[in-house]
Length: 322
Ligand code: AMP
Ligand code: MG
Image (cartoon, rainbow, N blue to C red; front, side):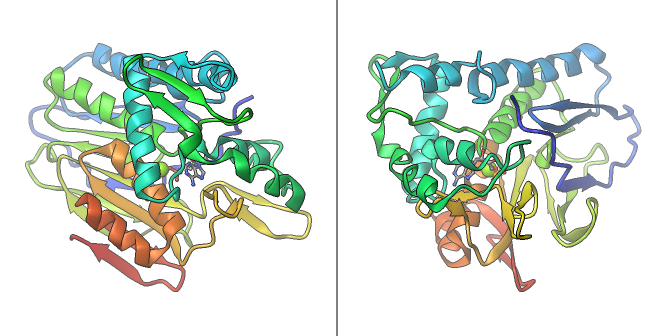
């Protein structure tokens, strides 16, 4: 059963001015558990948008651990018994995600699946697990126990019960694929917004930069605490205010987990936005930086040479590279 829908847009790409030559064409649908909206400024027919949404569905069939028929679900069910040969596409994504797991010392951790399932945050069965349950899950979360063999493109788990979760990278990855597809089809100006995971192709139709508002965690959806001005890039935000669960004692838990403690990450950051044309990377780093907290987060984004905007719990805005 997939998680219940709970995320609204957290980034608002605004300043959609009408353009002289082509009217914007927008399609919005519920996909990947969130609102996906694509706006193109081209004279193309609806088939272009059909193709873009097909990419979302096709990619979910590879990476969605909540779909029992997906390729990653097959890996999760079998890789502890024997190495599983996977598609080139899944292998490259797993290799990339493994690298960021390593570079972030597990702040972003592709092996976090068993912990995500245990908490179930964002779904109907969310609960605060017992300390014993959390303790006995931690040993399943070491990404080093995922063996990626690049010669035969296979994945093996060294420990029974491990599970790969690509939830913190999937939307960025899909955004990159859609951006490549639209560019290939001649689109020079477009906005891809996958639940706040935004990709801007080119500049606005009037030639100016796009302005993106970053969701204010303390205001209703649509309010923003700051803006970034950019073109031809992706802006991806993670926040400890998106998918929440409140237990019977009134304690609120969020969906970004720290696999070293087994609990939702305790961070001095409330929102992390990464700005880079590599949306796959932006998605992974937005999650990693949230878990790491401000000091280590700045080091991590600098090591990747990407831009970032962080908002601390005390309301301070930290800009890196912009
Ligand atoms: P994001 O909203 O991109 O930060 O991704 C959050 C989602 O990724 C969660 O709903 C989980 O499925 C998964 N996740 C949670 N914590 C982590 C983590 N530390 N590393 C990788 N994935 C995570
Ligand atoms: Mg992410």
